[in-house]
Length: 257
Image (cartoon, rainbow, N blue to C red; front, top):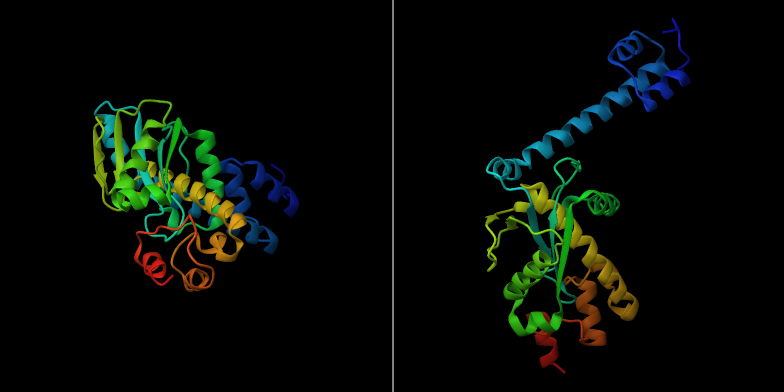
């Protein structure tokens, strides 16, 4: 290695890859520009290690069942139980253990940009993905709990690879597949977290489409939840076909008509 690399050369080397020997040589360089480059790289390495550690911690359920011989492990989760409008959406995801996706966690903790980035990675690397949707009408007919169960069952049936084990977020499904209900599963299992992300992005996109049909309700902003904006729009414009008429804030406004 040269006695003195230019700062740009060191920066390019850090970007393209370096050996441990080269890294130790870089650390001997006291130029401010190099010190800054190394500090930035150290920070990136620490952040990546945190993601690796989190992925390991959230793979305990999957590792346990793989050690027992299960291969096609599907995480199952839903999004949209609480909103006053729009569907409830569930997803089932079988991740590829040979292609780990770092950063998987509860979709509610992720920024919009990170959500979409992980959504694309899941679609690229997952072995199989299934999605199940239950409409506001079906939610009103069944109740939200039963509709959520049915959305999850649809998601599992939508997998193009048969799951031999289900990790389900806080729910037991009437399906003849071995399963474990995991409380706060989207924060404890990478498979459930992946399902949470797919369900969230899928539902958000559906609500954006509904916002184009019903622009006065702001569905693209609150995705159907009972925000002040949404309640005010209900008061001013009334109830639509995409509202859940069995939910009290909507039902109460129907009674006022």
